[in-house]
Length: 326
Image 1 (cartoon, rainbow, N blue to C red):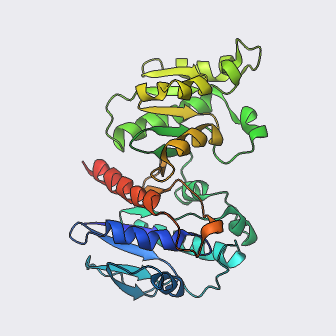
Image 2 (image 1 turned 30 degrees about the horizontal axis):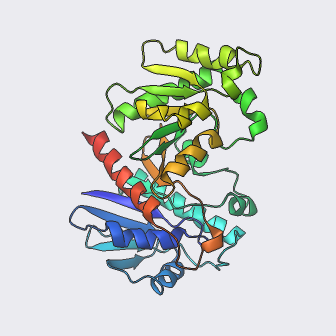
């Protein structure tokens, strides 16, 4: 029986709320075991607003996790003072503790995948945690250099060449090698994690009109096209002009598209899949998924958050775990 571990994310955001709501939706003790890393006080707070449809046990961090799938094991991450709706140093530290405990649990073979609730980069900074996000933290934990953010939904899959970088730096960070490596990791993940035997991939351009023969920008001719040509034995196409690519629904002809920077991919992806999109870290030795939205501090504590994306993240994790085992 597979075991899945959830982190609470930033406790001042919607993370704990959407996790509890997701448990109500996906809990099937006959199929898998669920574990939740969250301060006991925060978990109990959420139960005052959300009636649980599941049995649970609360354990200290040093206690053995029960094998009993009939109960969700809630691992108490310790005391925390909540300031709902605001990122704080305390919320940053608890979210990191939750992640670290989850990773140690997976490393001990006591869980098969991690589903991470949203964290706050501001709270991380206040806690002096030097990571821009989950992806980079996980890559360092496992000593992995070839990794990327993959966004998955039933409608579309996409990956990013650059991740959490200022737009002013994107051009200098792009290279033929980096784009080709991103494409290779994407191909491998599509084959291994999603069981797409011969992936057909579209690569987006960086500049308007794909550089218009270098009149607007030279990155297409100097970096993107050479990267695509270096993989001529694969089913890679582009570079495509992003506005026409999405306006004309060209993405429907491909298994995945590769974007040069964060918002180039995330704007169309979230417009199509805001409550159903999943963030998956490709290239890791473990399976990690998360919802494709943030902490939503503006609605935290109002019992108004939609749990659909984290529920889909769990389903994606279950699918990928099973695909890797097959």
